[in-house]
Image (cartoon, rainbow, N blue to C red):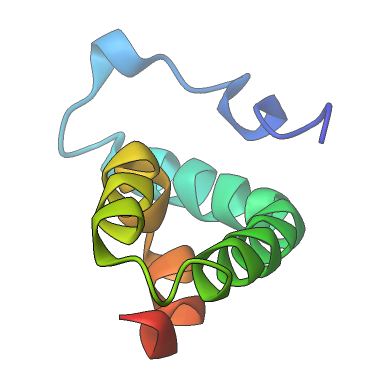
Length: 84
């Protein structure tokens, strides 16, 4: 996890343009691959937390609101599809 941002070491976000777009896309893809194992663990923890609250819809809504940014990540959204 310490190397998650290493892919962005050679990319200058201020100089983003059509010529540097492939470098930026490659860095983002590398970041997503690096973070994927952590996201899978997070999805497992969120899944168990959500299943524990199935009877209480108000509490469930609060949990979804609390973890909104995490749930919006494409890999986590795919993992938690059945909990929707």
